[in-house]
Length: 340
Image 1 (tube, rainbow, N blue to C red):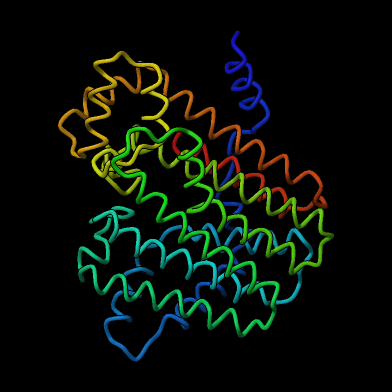
Image 2 (cartoon, rainbow, N blue to C red; image 1 turned 180 degrees about the horizontal axis):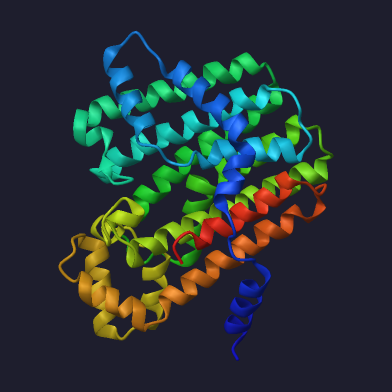
């Protein structure tokens, strides 16, 4: 058995199957209701168009994973007051603003199975409402009056912006390797997960080592979640993922399944993949999907996501035992097992 196979087997044995994601949501339900109410309240504006787009975003649903992570981390850290409600709203506003900007950059017209804001109201409105959400998040941040929180979130939003630019540079570049791909994931996705969980530990007054452990958990969870998401682009469909299969390829995004496949396919298939990345479009989608499957890239990508999920669970070991810590562990499982 290869070392890769041994790692996959070890990870699969260590990570328990997801038993009940609904129970995690139920545990956080009281906090999430308050967070959702605050989000609705602070999204309100005298500008009608902002309210229309905000209502569209709220109606879009989603699991609000990032604010839920923050709330669970704060409770796992023993926090008993209510600053985490406002801080969770800050985190969700930052995340939502990046989605609005992403959809414009990617020219996306579908998210979670619904029309995107830019498809309905145009790019200019989406960018400007994204800016509104960013600025609203910083208003809430100032109200918390904690320089440690502001420093972490200011650094995080700056890093996310760097990740957006890095991803833009990678579009159409068939020479992107695994390290460059992971660098984008870290900046675009994982750092906000890490900030959400780190800030929970900070609110709870945990020792520095445990705060760092929560940050490490969030970072590894972010890697696992995004790698799994990128895999779904090649094994899922609009009904499951909320976007069409092959959308990343159509946009010229070299994600991990493609990167892995190009390392193992024949010269002709590699040229076909390079052309698809460099020029976009889905003319060769069926051939490329077959090549990804035949090369073992799906299994390798799945193993990579699982390793990061395992690392996330491992980071929780130093935290005090509680149902909230268990819920964080279950979310690590969920991040990679929601459809496979």
